[in-house]
Figure 1 (cartoon, rainbow, N blue to C red):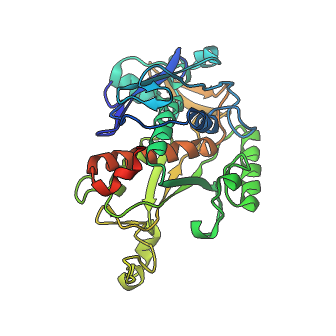
Figure 2: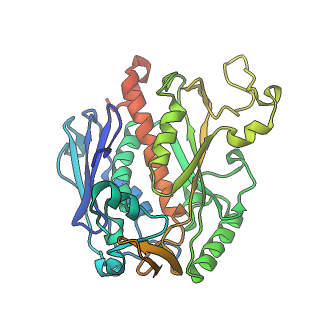
Figure 3: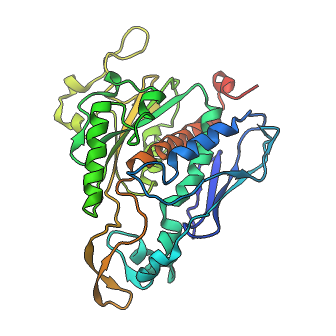
Length: 362
């Protein structure tokens, strides 16, 4: 299986399966001398881990990261950073009933047809448990580009949508982390939580959207043709489990405007009066806030009976069992932030511009 490496200079390679002994990764290309706050890395993992509230899966994992190399006295050495997170609460028997069955809207069918074999325990490699590794690497990336502020939050669950721009919301960490859905508007947060609990009681699941905002980004990040900044962000977001859509700036709503309405007019200082471009023009950051939204589908495993087929082509009925998220959104927030950080740190290192050298700890 190829395709397990992300990045061009700051490269992250991940390994492991949902019900294997562990998941982990290797970060290659991290500069030396970066002072790391290891508690912050664990904090980010705690935001992603299961069992943190009643609206997520109750799998009981500490998700404690163990660094094996590349860090000495809490500073990066410039050598590959190896890390591992052990799985402690697998219940593989919960998946015995799907050993020879293809679950609807899962990767079971495509994996087996492509590789001739699949790990049916929790989805194996296709499980979102792999994203732990992204959060470890993304947290390190955040600490390298520490002046860049990356904020993600849940902006909709099902048909419950925040009707405000991110500029009209309090995006402080304290507010976003004050509720289990990670929504900065407490009024909507309560509605979203109630919706998830209602859906869960029916044995069903629900999707929604996450909005991400990047502040303090300098002008000039990104490349103008195939490596456009928004293209790389889109690739990063679409690599996350359950993501079905990506839009930045005005997105699809921008198609409803005329050019005269949509153009971002310049001020004397180079800033723009509006920011429908989403902080990116010609594939390159223009110094304004970058903001984008991603759509996540409802979790495919539901506690209701559905018709499917087995590996022999027989039509059968299947019902989910075990511990599953009724909604992936709250746990996906730190994953979105991490993938954003990985894209940006790679660009900073690629540009190697002297005016950006101050982002690395001296």
